[in-house]
Length: 375
Image 1 (cartoon, one colour):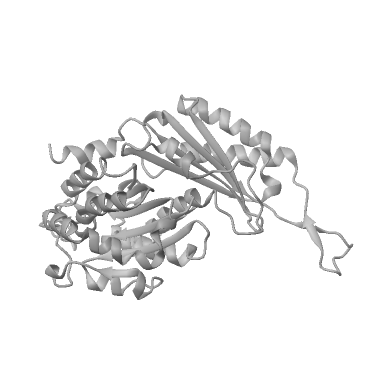
Image 2 (cartoon, one colour):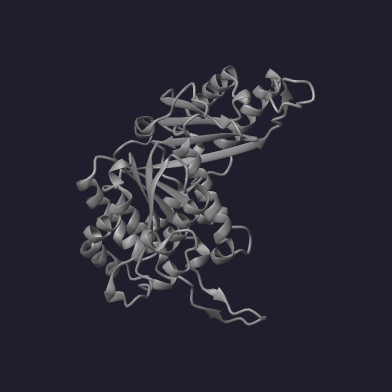
């Protein structure tokens, strides 16, 4: 699936930069952009060159918006066309989907995302997905002064919860699907968002790169037996702005080779045969962990109207019967037979992985809590 990733605001820009660092040459990634009002945020990006980062909103004076979502919305309405034109050098018409990455609790990225989604929908015949980073509760609560003092300091981001609620409501009618990422669930005890940022950005990037890259392979690489394409993703996540969750798991495997010429003097080798029972066990493990482990957002009781399964790794480990068994188990787990699956061969890989996407889910408790902040 060919996607164009657009990072909006500070959090979105940093994740776009991580996509560039790890997947810039990947076949699934047709383009990347980073857009923000904050000059320092854009200057701090390491892997995106100047042509792919763009500062908008001169009215902000090169600074952030201090959580003023209304100001962000005004800038979005004023600058959406300008931002779409800033993408032209990367030929966005090649994309089968645009992926907006946005910190929902912010102002600049959250403010511009709905307007940019509308502009892209007007210009291109492609799906539009939003990866919405949900603020952690500890960002919006008063902080201890430390050193044994009893008084409290103001919260780091007092408007983040309400901004997130309003941003989700604004995005849902304008995008095909929203993939929330619950920072709260991924933070460790006593850890702050700045302390966890690199780790969380890696989690987000790895999961979505695996999902979007599953159906795209470089020339000469093994072709999947069950090809996953953009229409499959669209059939599962829908086109009505619903919430979708992504689970992921992987396990290291041995990828030894047997030489065709004794000691391999002539350099020829082929993959060593994989024991069937071992391949079955590994695939069963990663499928169950992807379904039941920590996902991008909680799935109430694991139930979903529609489910997508991708299993990938070294081709010798992709046992067809094991994948079929995993698919049947997942259909029972999700409580629905509306399930699609695909495989993703990685000839040089050393891990077997599974990605589980669930859509048509009951509203996660975390999303309900955020929405309640403006009731």
